[in-house]
Each structure stands twice: as structure tokens, then as C-alpha cells.
Image 1 (cartoon, helix red, strand yellow):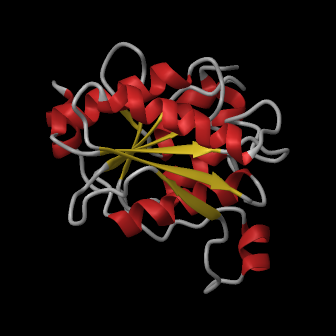
Image 2 (cartoon, helix red, strand yellow):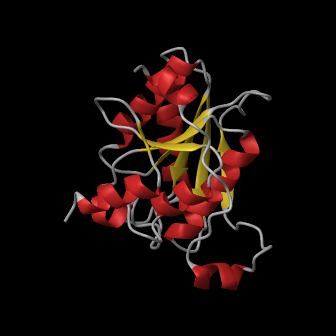
Length: 206
């Protein structure tokens, strides 16, 4: 099954799943998702359904963006690259802190490479989040706002046990997003992430 058929055929994830009761109580049930998204480069075209890819600053970042770019190309979608800025708390996607200028440079490099392949691209920096799950919820909220076709994530350098655990960035994103969240690999088809898929991926690391 091709990437286009994969994204167009899979059902939309249900909304409303809540995680981390303590964190939700702190934020309040009606409280907004708190984070700062800073646009980099030209904005995404209005009325389009982008493929959003979340990536940090690590050795696999370029390969993850390239895999998401193939998915966007196959579905005729623009690509939005969201760089999760390295902070002391968002450890799944980063190993040490980085400045805003460094994060902007990373996004710009990704945008230039993707645009060279004819894709319509836009970029964001996701920063100032309180913890892993807050970052995931913030990205899910953003994906809903832009009407994303799918959100793509790659393998974390922290390992599967950390990446797919309850309360992680990827887990919170998967449960909160109303669009599909997919795990992209350098080879093979994207894998739709669900509660069962997260559990299987955690188990594979034990």
C-alpha cells in the first residue's frame, strides 16, 4: 500500500482522550494548551491540509524530515516542519539546550532542503513547554488548528521505552490529536500510532 493510500484510508483518531490527570488538573479542564509556536519562513497556504512533522535536533532529524516529505509528496500536501526546541524538559526530542537562533537555523536548513525537491513548506519552532506531555498536547492543538492531514514523528534517540511511555511527547500527541499520528521510518510504510501500537512499541524495547 502506498503512502498516499495509507493516509487517505486510515480513519481519523477520536478526540477527547485525556492523559496525566495531575497535569490536566493543574491546567484546568477548560484551560488552553500553553506553548509558544514561532513561525519560520513563509506561512503555509491557507485552506490546505499539511503533513506536519515534529523533529528535534539530533542525528536522525534530516532522515525523519525526508521521510515525512515523501509522505507529503505522495498525498499532494504541503509540509510543515515543527522543530521541538531543545530544553531541559523535552528530553525525548533533544539531548541538551539550544538557543532560539540555533533552532531557527535548524528549521531553515530543513526548509531549504525540502523546497529544493519542489515541496511547499513552512516551519515552526515549538518552545517554552512545561513537560513532555504538554509539548505533545501543544502540537496536537496546533495540528487541529491548521487542519493537518497527519502528524509524523520519527524514532527518538532516547529509545522506544522513553518515547512511547505514558506521559511522553509522542503518547500525548497520539491521544490528543484529532488527525492521524504516524511513525515514519527511513524505509517502509508509515505506521499509524494508536494506544495498542504504543503498547506494542514499548514492549519491543523490553
